[in-house]
Image (tube, rainbow, N blue to C red):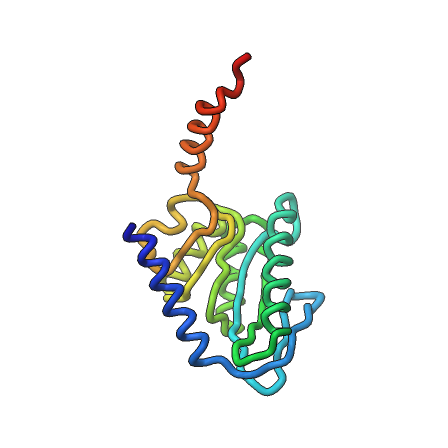
Length: 180
């Protein structure tokens, strides 16, 4: 209950901040090399950064998250209005050390909101950084408890590992799967 209330409060504060600070900008376009969205017309855009495996064995996860985030940014920016976004996704190759380096690149770029890291081990490393830097972070798929434990500005969209195991066991038990 306390976590739910905290998430709702954080969302309300973020919405308030975005409403109060947004400027006008044109719709974004995807840059080929860095994954940047460019919305530089006449106003200020909120800089959203994320890291994920864009190359290597886990690239399917990172590219899916990057593409989904890009679609959302493009749709929001196409609506016009005062709130616009720039997206910059960096490749962490599913490696914790490379994720921290990618996070630092995003921080140097001026990232204001983090999509965290896509995969769990890199996200554990970057969540420590976002907590220290007090940057709001929301990971789409990292599932370890260590990602959010003790961090009031780091959130997960995916169920945590212990919840996935117990929910799966309950489902299997209820459906009597594996029995003839």
